[in-house]
Image (cartoon, rainbow, N blue to C red; front, side, top):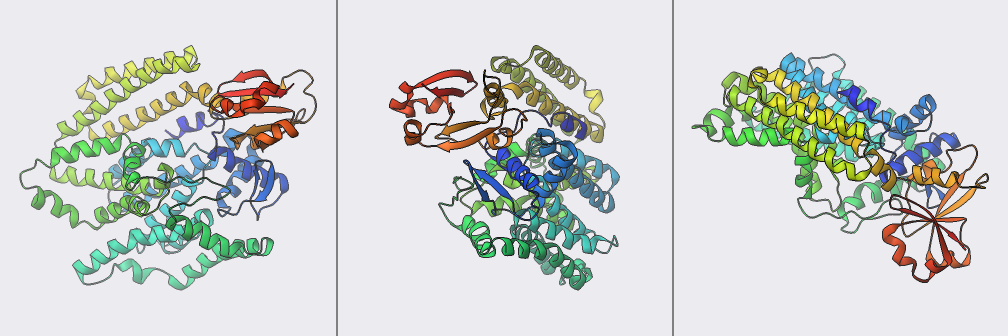
Length: 530
């Protein structure tokens, strides 16, 4: 499954605006040989990017130095973080449950839609998820593994270096309700609290957090105040958050729950269907809910699963990527429930087999329909044929119930084929996304123009794609300086070329009459002043 993700890392080009922005920040840090202050080319102006700590950028820098400045290197840290998350999950489930449940949990995690997509994106969310997973899994292992106590604090510290204090809040909001429930039921706090190395672990935590924050404050006076208040408190309380690095993304109340189901596809649907089937059990409350509620691991994984979603209910801005730290908790929960079901048989093997075969059939139908639709978006015939062939193979497999008699084997089947479907979807829409949601092909088109043997200033009115600051300098012959321009600059001091989205052309109004269209790439129109 990880092999399929690595194969698709280079496709598509870096997507705007977020992937292009993060990839450009790490590129500038490498170019400037600066490992303290992240930098951003903001619409043509170079500024410190102090909205987030630099740990993920450090990983991207190392990847650039090893593999060059390209899409593969920008996205590689995400895949490696996903592998680390899987190892943490494997360790805790194998230790506390069984090796079969460990295989199931890792398979479920790897094949969840959100995990597969985010692990191949140039975003810090999987690195953040890894740090939170290190902390939360090792908290469970305190007293069972010698290194777990210090690894708990190391995970918390790394989380702060990726996303700031929110990492500690997330870890605390998972552990606190679980510990309180244990205290009310058993009359004592969980043993982990007394066995954690609070003094030495706290020193390790401070040793991870403090050095960079002090260096950043020394290099950029006033950083600490702005960072802790504006980026870590104000943004989650204000109804109209937005700064110069990101736009407002206000969502409806409860939108996080709508992201949760597709992010954990197909397992969110499988779990929902099986829960509905189990709810018909005659003594549901006594024979099903009571044993589950008495299992500390079920309660812990449930708290872990719901923490991000519940926190985002009160925040005015959120995206599906913000839910990533809860994905391992969901995989742990589902594997634990599966282990309970093996012992109590609330859901029959036939019901589970039917749910997984239906999932396989659904994946096949979706893949065939998606591959057919992709022909309208410049998909290659080879990719189309591969996708359709895979789709029909899945449909054929779903018609053989005998291959789904073993539940663990069936889970692995679904996981592998899910990853195959995701990979086919990425390759099918690679060209379309690269032309319309990125700028590499557009900038290469500009470099191929006659007499383009000098540096070129390219202006983007109305909308500035961050990927242009990554791809623009990636040439030894023609360097492209990408800037954002307003309508006044179009007539007073126009750049060498203007690149505008098709939807924004009407906004040019009278200026458009003095512009000559040179080429069109996807949604991008390349113009020049007459």
